[in-house]
Length: 205
Image 1: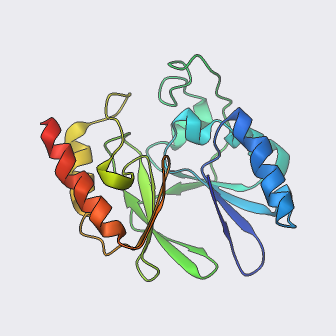
Image 2: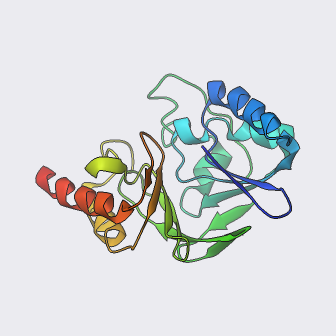
Image 3: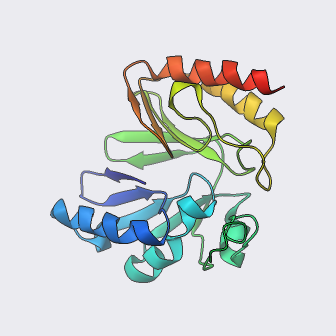
């Protein structure tokens, strides 16, 4: 879960975590001197329940605008237990609305940042990364992690070939900061980590 605060002190929340995470996040926001109602927008990097399970709660409580990649929006609105992995992990998933169906290449302004939506399928069919070329920041969801790691492809709609292509594309970025969905983040030469992931995934073939 990442927070980006713009010049008007409005918050973009990137991924919502699941049940246990939401209380921690609201307390964190309050410790910043802000409120949950300052969350004006939620963007999902993908719809797996550990990234999206808290979405309906945030929508009901704070009414942010919801952005989901176009191929995954129906699964959110229909409460798809399989595609969100809720059924696999014997959890629940409450359906909710999607306000904006994201398309690859579109830009999302967040204060001093301008993130481009990169469709990076492989971990899931609707996985995206958010890339600010000027700031050299990549928010990567579960597509790619630090130290040569990358997302699994054995979940519904996962695809090894697609992930290889996605990682090859990301490895071409001149990135300094990598903010993944799990494990540690990277500041400095993030491109080195992207190239390692693109190299290591080929060993699975």
